Amino acid sequence: MKCLLRNDFIDGFRKPAQYGYGPHLGFDYRKLESYIRGKFIRSKKLSLMERFFVGFKMSVVYVFRKR
Image (cartoon, rainbow, N blue to C red):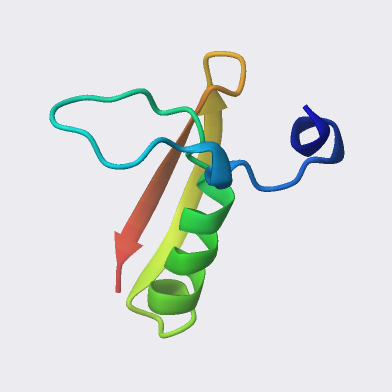
């Protein structure tokens, strides 16, 4: 609960890998976004065209353009 209130990363609560589709609790889009920015956007392989949230901020959608 403290992590949610402080807007900290929640990926530490993610269950270990499972067979099939497991719950997504603990997936934090901010770490993925940081990785994409560092690996692809800064190196100018991709450019971020748009980012928006859907479903009460339950999902984030990215639109990239390949450079």
